[in-house]
Amino acid sequence: MSKADIVKMLLQQYESGAISEAAFEKALRAVATDGDGPEPSASHWEYQEFTVPLSSLGEFQQSGWPVNGGIPYDGAIGPINKVVLAFVNSITTQGWEPTEPIDADRLYRAGRITEQTRKTQTMLQKLNSVSVYLVSPQSVRINCRRRVPG
Image (tube, rainbow, N blue to C red):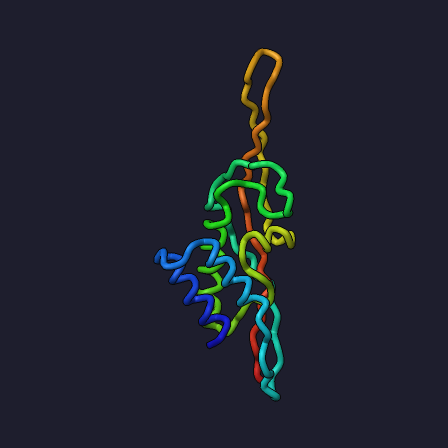
């Protein structure tokens, strides 16, 4: 079974609720770090970076600075994973496969997600205020490859 087939199967299981988000992310990491297997002799790899829009996801409230370097806004991991997996699923029919982990948290840590931040202020008292940051993921870049004959 190819990586593309495994990604399709994981996406179907995740969307149907058969596996949890944590199990889904763990499986994606395992697929992304799996060996590449033997290479056919008369072919080579073609590489391409795809940019996937995320602006339709809207804004998320920033939850602070994560100690592990992961996504610092609440509720974004699941929606980003869903968009990324749907995109990867669509390009696998053309032979493309990701060359890097494709779960949202690791893409964020690798600097592959671009975002726009907006600061809002809520007054608590006359002289004190608290700043709230709203983050809109804009796009994610995914490196892929496919085998090309010759």
